[in-house]
Structure formats: structure tokens, C-alpha cells
Image (cartoon, rainbow, N blue to C red; front, side, top):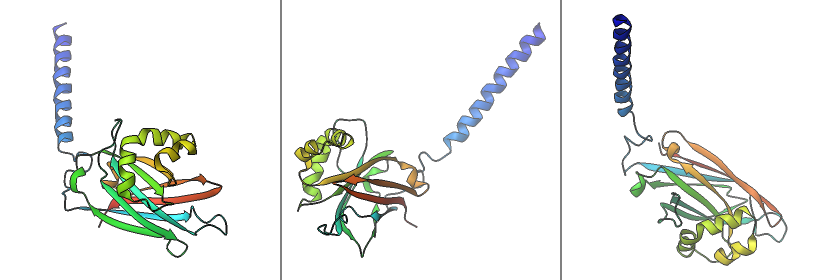
Length: 198
């Protein structure tokens, strides 16, 4: 009986020692791939139009004026200021764009919301940003339900083409995703890439 009790105690001590060793090994691993990053590192973002939003008919402009907004994402009723905004034009001659930006203030963030908007008026990111920050839950709900009248209350003539919740895995390996759909009978499809700048 004493031998069984001794063996049992020995096994418990051995298991605790092994788990302590594994925990200490895990503590040395990078957290979210950010251990060796600094504010001087840069992120590269690319977008390619596989199908423009404004090329359906002969009356279409054949170019898409695009706004990308990226916010830190948490389960809250409003968003904090964007970590990235970019306004540009894609057309039949220029289907792809790329840009690089610094990490700056978001080293401690782990999730982000990516918004892709087509601009049909003279609105700018400075005008649209506060609207999305305050009303993003209602805007996303209306987008999911294809409730264009409700969307118009918030973003007027601008078109939300899609959104994506992404995590910080692009800091370790390049991330690629698509935003596609149909808006006003016109199909659109964009491929977005995010990754560390070499």
C-alpha cells in the first residue's frame, strides 16, 4: 500500500514539474507575433479589383473611387479612431494599388475591422469616419440585411461594399481575403492583401 501511495505522489510531482517546464517554455514565445516588432516597422496593404463596381453599363463611370478604413475592433457600441484610412481610384487602366504605413499606436491591438467603401459623391474620409465610428453597428446591420434605405440615412450616396473582421496574424504571415457582392445589379470583387513590408 505504501508503495502504491509513493508511486502516486511521485507521478503528481513529475506531472507538475513537466507542466511548469512547458509553461516556462511558452512564456518565452512571442505573443501574437509582436515580441520583436517596433513602431518603425511597416505594413503593406494591396488591393486588386477583379471586377470593378462601376463597370456594369455604358453609363457607368468605369472607375471606382474607393475608401478603406481600418479600426481597432472590440465588442463596443462605438469605434475608436481609425489606424488607417486611404482614398484612391481604381479603373480599367489601374486595377491594383498598394500602400505602406507605420505601426504607430496599435501594437497592443489584436483584432481590426476593415471597411471597403465606394464613394459616389465628394465625401472624404474626414466626413465619413465619425459617422462610421458612432453608427457602425447600425450600418453593418443594414448592410447585412441589404436595407439600402437605412444605409442611406447614415452614408447618403456612398456604398459600403463590404467589411471583414481580421486578427493580427498578418504580422506573422501575409493575409489575403476577398470582398465581393452585387450592388445595383453590378457585381464587384476585390482581393485585399496585408503583410509586413520586407
